[in-house]
Length: 292
Image: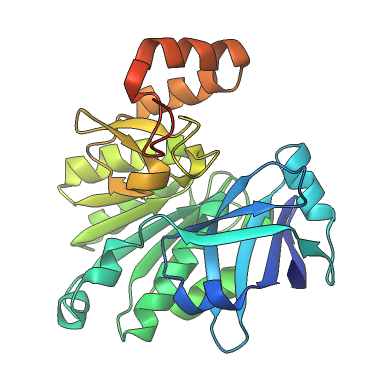
């Protein structure tokens, strides 16, 4: 059992939890994710790692209540336990593989939207620990749903806030903010975008226009997290990939976002899942090795 040692309401329906999981905390890297279950009858919920403390043996997750299972998770309190807390899964950020000198010479911009702020924080914190600072644009519809502002500011070189309604920072979405920075002469070698799929799509369209290599995290489309369910199948550069086993990070300029969004809508119904399985045949499932 994995005990919750801290719980905090960050914004309406968005919760932060520190969970006792020493083995995961010891080996976790930014970009990876977990599979979490409330109890033996619960659904498997994939959640990206927000933070980890090797000394305390804790891992931090951020969850948003969007259905029955995440609501059950949110009802847990300090002292309660998760039945399953499995990880770290997926591939870590490619940045963790680069030599420190190369990292120091890169001008990196992160773009975080909504609860995508949590995995962005993990990467920014890791970079700072390596002596490398990156800029960040943090976006939301309005000020009241911005999360982890103090924490993000502490690990960013420059933190730019963008809200759709203008209630804080730049008035407009993250693309408006990026274009404004570009017009002011800011230049970047790499952009990393994590957030809602529609946000990532339009951010990638802009960065492609500006000629900036871009990485996105497709954790938002994962369900099972092991490649067995076929939920996170997507096309990247014309090739079939699965976010959970091949990602979750990919070249944003190669991801077919329209296909991924349409497929996600279909996957929500039983009839849709049957149709996808029929249309996609042997490529419907990922690398589980058990699906024939």
